[in-house]
Image (tube, helix red, strand yellow):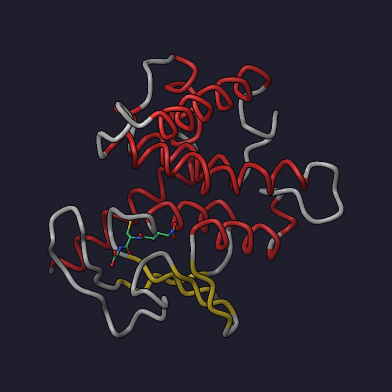
Length: 203
Ligand SMILES: N[C@@H](CCC(=O)N[C@@H](CS)C(=O)NCC(=O)O)C(=O)O
């Protein structure tokens, strides 16, 4: 059994999507978090995440925090689902590259854009331009960043693009990619479950 520590409309929302993709037995443990955008909320003593953030999972007694680590841990734990190349396969290097790229390149570019920090910051703008270029390059070669097959890398990248769409250039390639990923049945179920959790919390 996997327990997902979750706060509605946060980075843990896409982990419900991920668990739905994997078809693994799981339960959602709603927790409160501090919301920096509004200054509301506070960390929850019931949350085992070392920084009281979400997402975190506990699987057979093992705590895993950080979105990238959770995505990788679970695609490795359920290899039969084929949602991320496993160690020893030719595509593993590319999978790891895109997961690390998401955390180290795309997220910083996204948040620099959201904070209005790109103009007048040549290093940040250079990183942002490179991220946009690399993504377009990959999506010119296939529907997903690894080519023909959807993976956990797409889940992270597409959900971040959807969240910060206004920061990125107008592009049918990006719009179609987001729609392709977020239109997956598991993603639709994940969003509905996120809403249901939010209602539960409010009640
Ligand atoms: N690098 C972490 C970031 C997690 C994170 O910042 N989560 C936010 C919600 S989207 C949170 O829990 N914030 C609570 C806080 O800042 O105290 C990841 O990707 O998992």
